[in-house]
Length: 317
Length: 281
Image (cartoon, rainbow over all chains, first blue to last red; front, side):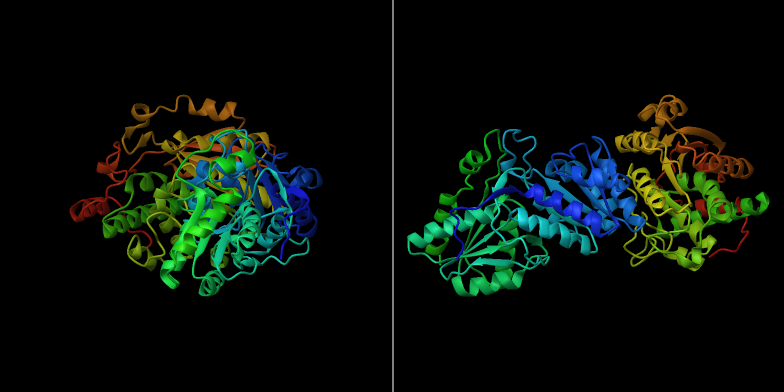
């Protein structure tokens, strides 16, 4: 059982940066592009070590995505990084046509996703990106939960042939998964076993879900925690097998209630094993400036929100 | 070097193909396709170093072409087939259910000769730059060619790409602009003037050449000049002074045929003006 008391904190973006540098040494086909956010994305180490394989696009994300598609034509494995807002909504049509429809081996690496971006406010806090990306045919969508998992995911997507959206965040965050974890795209990870309710979480919310499980345990509720790092393709077998045991679900994500993990889970359950679902997500709103934890609390993404959702969904069984 | 007269005959056949394909599909974009046919023939039949029988996605050791203005698909498909990428018979499937010859070019159907989907405008130059960068990393001396429409230059992404290529000395790239002065809603000058286009590319740091876009000899000469300017630290662009609808009298001098298919009677009138030089598909 995971203990959430004392865990070192490290930003998921730092896990991306470390893995990218390692990939640079390991795989000469890996190249990287960034749109004037090299430091923020922690891509500076790669840029310094491999100047010939790093392409500074300037503040021109559309061109960056197109160039990434072009680099893949020569067999390269391009990792294109910027903030999640500019990596998706701003360049949706470029990703749709030049990357997804053209089935290019491009890795779109998106940092500062969600409310936990914090003080910059709603202009930068995209809450729609998972929906935008998962709608694209052939696009793999991954939202790892901590530093170690982001690092492992970055390595895994380099081995995967095809377009990938890798979403991670800005703040220092508890780093609770093992450093030597094997990351399998599309394979959910059960973080805690339980039999009363399945709490299915992605990204930063996996940690909050673990804290909620401890609180629920104190109330006599046995919660199962599933880390869905890959939203697409969704590990439906893992969802179904958990629900067969618990009979109800809570989803938790740092994303809009529309178009994200909650939608994917609800669709899966409706088709395969109808059961009550409660969704912990941002309720059709834009965010605002503030500290990450303050914002997550205000917009209903905190431990008590998951606990309350668990009780609600259990009462609907 | 091929005889320009022979290449001109190929162009005439390509124009027949375009008219017949668009008529057969009852949809498509004949105007721009007719205007750019000569450039595509010069490029694929005379200039490019490529191996149509051994197409692969990476194109290492071969020149690569990106059609950014994907609506000229009929012209590209005809030239690809006449160059040997696939049998001309397949041209008859253009825009029909199940075809590899989609309305706009795509990779999904596996048509040899296509390396990226295009049609949503303004994206091809960025892709061409990326492919050129990959060639440099691969120490591949071959070049990347990209054709854009002039109306397409209204898209901001083109100028992002133009800035990048000059700043980063992407000098294994030859872009071209199909400068026919027309777009769907009318003349460029009425819809959104480009101003002094030569000066624009020039101040963006490109080597600018101009060609008579419907004159085979001038096209070949200018393309050869363009190649001589590569690998000198500066990207190259050719402004192709073309005429939309070139080769069919009633389709010239108007934007009306940008995206309209000729009916059977109009098709017959058009084909009367275009000799069947290589044999219809």
